[in-house]
Image (cartoon, rainbow, N blue to C red):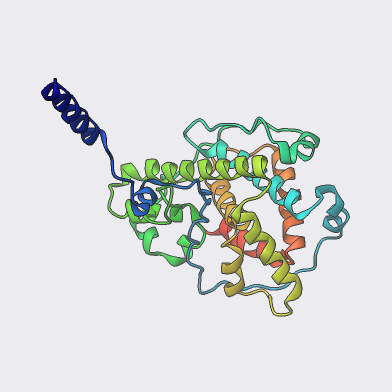
Length: 285
C-alpha cells in the first residue's frame, strides 16, 4: 500500500513540474506589447525651388476678410480645407477612395457645406522627358514627383523610382504616389472626425501662432519652404500642378470653393504672397 501511495505522489509531482511556467520577465512582456500610436500623415518633401523665383508682398483681399467668420475657428478652417483638398485629390486617384460618412467633431460645419461631386480627372504625362528630371525649374513646378510611394516614410519618392524606370512605367508610378498620398489624407480626416485633432493640425496651428507674433516672416524662399512643410500648403502646390496636367477644365463651383478656402488660409497665415508660387507652378512648361 505504501508503495502505491509513493508512486501516486511521485506521479503528481512530475505532472505539476511539467505544467509549471516561470514568471515572465518584464523585458519579455514589453517586447510583446505594441501600443496604439497615431499614424501621422507625413507631409511630402517639397520640390526644389527655382533660383529665379522672386516674391513681392501683395495686399490681402477685402472680400477674404469679410468671410472670416464663415469658416469659424482655425481648427474648423483646417478641417474644411483639408476635406476639400481630399475631394480634389480623390478625383485624380486611379484607385477608388473611401468617403467620409460620419464626422462627429465637424458634423455641423460639414453639413453647411454643400457637397460637390467632382469628375474623375485624367492626368496627362506624355510630355514628360528624361531631361525634365534634372531641370530644377521644371521640378519646382511638379511637386507630385516628390510624393512618397510608401506609407510610413518620405522615401523613396516618385522621382527616385522613375529615374530607374522605362518611360512607359512613369505614369503608373506617379499615379501610385498620388493614391498613397490621398489615402493618407483620408486617414488624417478620419482622425480629425473621430478625435478632433491631428499632429498636422497642431503643426499648422503652431506655425500660425508663430507667424502672427513674428515681424520677420516676409516673402522669401526660406519662408515658403516652412509653409510647404504643412499639409494644407503642400496640398495647394500639389493640386495646382495636377490641375495643369488635367485634360479638361474643372467644375466652376469646385474651383470657386477651392479659391474661397485657400484665400482664407492665406489670409490667416499672412501668406498672400505664396500665390506667386502657385501661379509659377501653373505657368512653367
